[in-house]
Length: 139
Image (cartoon, rainbow, N blue to C red; front, side, top):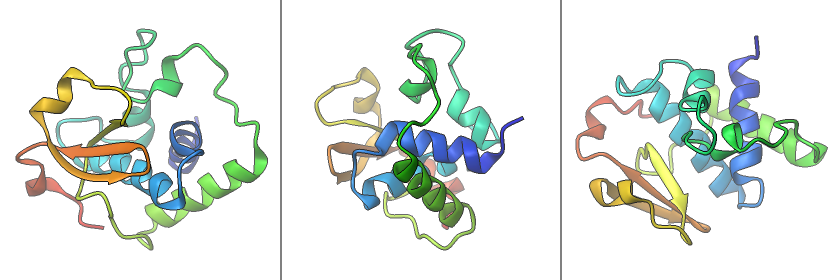
């Protein structure tokens, strides 16, 4: 069984290693917001894997794209693990407006119109549901 830290770090690595430090932190924060919401699975690994039963239908595209989920860039993965550790231990504050969703700015997913945009960080746009503040972890 993979640890929550490694699930989070792997998601940061594959979803945002080409982003700024703030962008990588933001992806970690989205995963924690989902974990803390009653609308999503209650563990980090389950949040990251959600929807992965169907190729290209999961929330975090790296998980169900059919490619290897083994990080190859050791320095980038070390940074992702450091970000995951800091986020899990509450040493990094939320900068996304408690977002539960994000997408790259060059795509327009249909679900985006149902949510409230909170921030743009790098080439990612972050969102939360209209009622999401009631359960935000506030880390």
